[in-house]
Image (cartoon, rainbow, N blue to C red; front, side, top):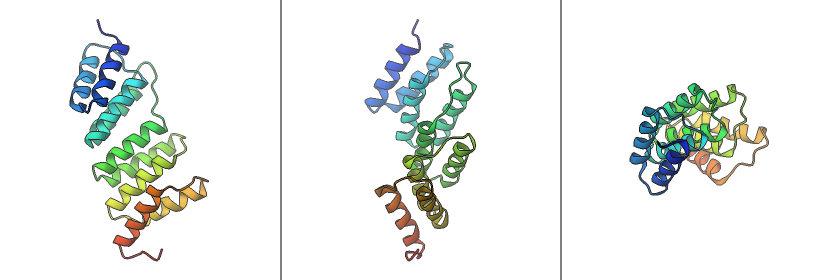
Length: 164
């Protein structure tokens, strides 16, 4: 019978080949056969969710991790992927919620998490929040990147607050 390593290889290959639908099917098959996912499988499935903009499924994967008997814990990369998925889907509220949850769980946001959250706020017309996050990056000693600058500029510019 296939084990977690077999499923991991299949799911990762599906994602690399752009077959997100198949990756998600194999993930469900794996769970239905009682095979517990590991971090590699969850990461690959998260990537499939990101490519599809399927934030609801990404949240389900996070829940699966938290409920796993193996004690899988979402990390900054997991949260950054979920935030990016929410951003892609245009769900700025959920992106912000996941950003805050990550901090509550004791994780320090990285540049990717900040940039994705800023971009989600920009897409949602939340220029004040985008600007707050942009300033928080500097306060935390993170080097702001092109993505965070561009998203913040777009957010302020689209609201007519370009002078901020």
